[in-house]
Image 1 (tube, one colour):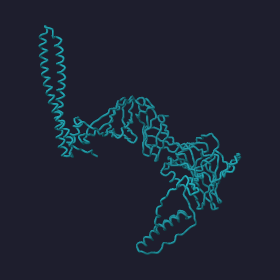
Image 2: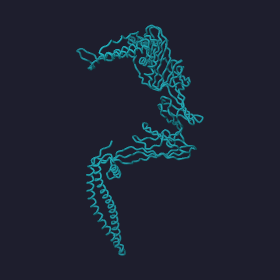
Image 3: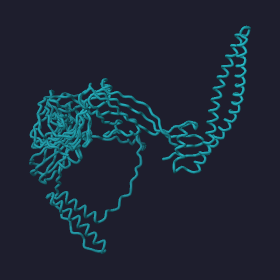
Image 4: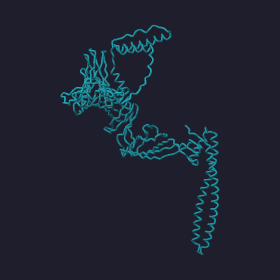
Length: 629
């Protein structure tokens, strides 16, 4: 997608250092176009008219690999390019340093140590005629850097996109078509200029193989010859590729391919037919649209900012370009998003700007400056923002709003999940219940967004209207509005299903079974087993409840009888306390009699409880419920 330039600003930032040679130079070919990416390389195009049988390129030593791996050529007037050769000779320095005898005997002379100061030669052979030539290649280049401005007004937001371009190429970009691309296509370091001879095994005397044992290879059978129609189409495609008339002959080649198909169809239906007309051969020539190749292969599908007219960027300088100035959907608001690096943000929200990317392309990560209310408001950073996505960017802390946050863990509901071999598993809904209390000291109403940390795998239950649940980012943005001097409470519930092993005697188990029995799709046989088992469960609960009461009474009686005996021992020899002794003796006898009854009943309950418990365990073992999908 292309976005036209609104204006440009030359910064004139000079970078000190030693003089750097350009990556590539060629006599008669001037630099006409530069495309800068976000991966450390740029695409360069050079154009010009050349006469003769060769063009010599001088390539900086550290750029030879990139040049050989990306070099492409376009013949605008249909002349022929025969070959591009790179001799394995290196340029000697102006004053070669003395070297030992063994170095002088080497096939390669001494070269400068710094590859940026060493030049290699690539010779492109031509046919000796005039050429309107264009060549393209990539070379290392500083990434361009985006910088954004957001002007906040009462009812609208204005977005500016700036790009900073740095030229460290070793040459001035004069009257050059400049494009910056918000993309980082794959780019590799290559060493195509370095001779490479792989090692081989050595055959010693006695036919012994040293070091490496060759392995066998498997070859597939050759494919069958193509049908006649493919041969006709292939000839037509060759005619399209090599005809010097370009587009006109491409159409002619396409017509011949269609004619070949029709001829094949006639031969197939009738069993006979005239052979296809001979394909006309033309003088070999191979035009190549280099601009289309670069757009598809290097920047296909990426957001492009292409300047409408040529610019000049001197070497060792930077240029700041205004790429876009557009009104977009947005608002000024507040965001509660605690950040460990800003301690006060645990109690106060940030001032933020929210806006939607309506530029038609990707906005890459970069600094964002905010303006409004007659001046500078603050700075923030946006992450990569695709077309149509919204960003909420903090730029200041708001002390007039206070937020309190409280979290409780909730378990609720129960659903029968699995019963097997007497073990019960229920599905419960568990999760945090977060309460936000927002207090406003502002004199006007405020819109506050709560950045709520989401629990993995959970659902946000009945969130307020307008909530943006960004589960991929692990958070949700929840909007609320606080009036002047008001306090607002927002409760957010998150739940996820959790399988829990459960005791059959628990209330949760009873709730799960009751829900199952009330379901219309409950299995009748299983329902009958559950009812029989839960009748025993009811008897067992009553027996256990009675036993607990009797044990509590037993404890109280034992304490009372022991206390009464202690009191009787205290007044045993006191003749004046005869009446008290009779009262205590009567009380002790009554308590002892009741204790005997309680203990006897506990023995009976214990026997009966064990029997019912055993019957209940046997009954639930007969029940089987598989987990539901």
